[in-house]
Image (cartoon, rainbow, N blue to C red):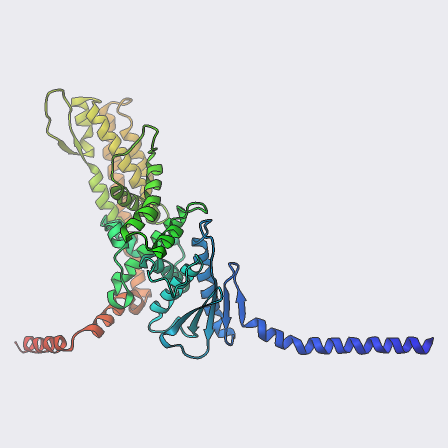
Length: 466
């Protein structure tokens, strides 16, 4: 019995060592097989011909791209879809990208250095286009009708921003659009979004276009739900090619914007409260309202010079004394002289309408003001609300006092901004400070005609001789 027991123990030891040996041998092979392939939550497979730590940022870039695209495509309207595979090859692919459809999969082959290639914009744009179409059930190789470029550039801009920007606050992500807001020079939204630009041809203008596309895409995400997704509708209608580009815009993005605008303004169809404005007007007014609300607020207020311009416009008011059967000329005054009109005309209909308008303007100013001025602006509002409670002599004194306080606060704020700007000029290298300008200058020199260069050289020489 003892001999049989020892033999059994020996057999167990042998089996154990064999099992451990097989497992140890299999581990490197398994690790080699799995370490080069990564699966995202949406089912996209990211494969590297040979993965090592230098590809980590590329992997994170592709994961974020997939997560971003999948977030925009959250809709019950998608009935079928292709599985996407992104394969990073060690060798070279002509053009930097190749897209192949095989047995229900969309395979996207990329060069390992696609993020630093000269034509990276074209490569990444084609990848985004293929993923948008594939994830909504269309084969990008047989779909003859390209998706709207602003949709692709919006995603591309968010990718570049995530991996190249050093910004912290979201409000600093759109410096070009914010500058237009501050100057009150926003373009026509529909025309701008449908005018395609490229970084190779349009330089700095493209940067502003990219901001607009990314901003629009973010707002469309806010207006989307699983049962009503304008981004999905846009892709489906474009890929099926049953309507014109303008009709597709109206049925998808335009429809969502108009619906949001009506809700924002309190309009309800079929309930007696309607608005006679056209849909085109609503789209533009929505754009101006939303972009100002998102980019200029208490977290990112107006620069002092722009605030001063708006405050000067606020100080001027137009009063029309309405009388039956008589036409009255408008009276233009400064806000400090409002008590004189009250003493002469009292709380007439025209006076109350003018005050209501000024209260709305003042509320907008408080929303975009620097912190140093907010308290004074609120006191100004309270003063203008006292006409039925206090004598105009007291209101006049308080108005003059608070307007002087606002002036002093703005002067102080301007000095602070000038000081900070001076520090920035000293601490930030000129190459970084004027990076975009330098890139634009280099881009133009490449595209300059040699004959024009020679002509300008001759003109310069003759000018120096004179």
